[in-house]
Amino acid sequence: MSGNTNFPTSLDDNTSLQEVTDGVSGLLASHHNNLKEAAKAIEAKVGIYNTAVATSLDYRLGHPSSGHIHNGASGQGPRLSASSIDGIASITSGAGRHVIEVGDNYSWALVASAIFHPIILPRTMWLEAIEIAAFRGPSGGTTVFDVNIGATSLWYASQGLRPRLGPTAGAVYFTHGSVNYVTGVSGALVTVDLDVVGSSQAVDRPTLMLVFREQ
Image (cartoon, rainbow, N blue to C red; front, side, top):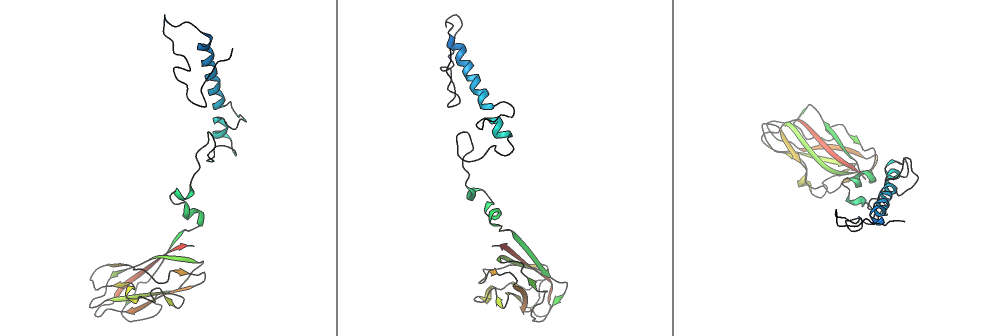
């Protein structure tokens, strides 16, 4: 005689597995057979070693190529939304970030073009941030830098947002304002100009950092 079980469609409870009371409940075949069917259902769900049953846990957790997947099917994981996984956009689009640093061990006191060695972009990238620091800022005035991709200033329409270091006796740091031109094509030449210099004391050992994101 076959018994009945709710599992694996739903969980069994004291009704389906027929709870009994000593000295009160009569022994019925279903008391044993329902437990038997529940145990068989659990064994089938777990699976034997190296089972080929694709719905079993042994198969899904141990199969080298056809195991657990998130496809929304019964017993499998729910479907995953790639856009909801933190950082997945950078992985799938290849949008890695690169920091390019240029600078020297020199004190700049005169306006000049291409004050650091030029940079050639190895691929098309989007400029995400630009920052500049110096061991010591100028005195008696403000030093202003400009960054060009090709012949175009990053601030061609808003020169007032160019990186600037105000007069200070100690280390000084600047984070750029919004740029007007942010995409650098593969092979473009990036140069840094010194447009304005402070008086009395030059800017000492400036370093400029460009943060690019791959497109």
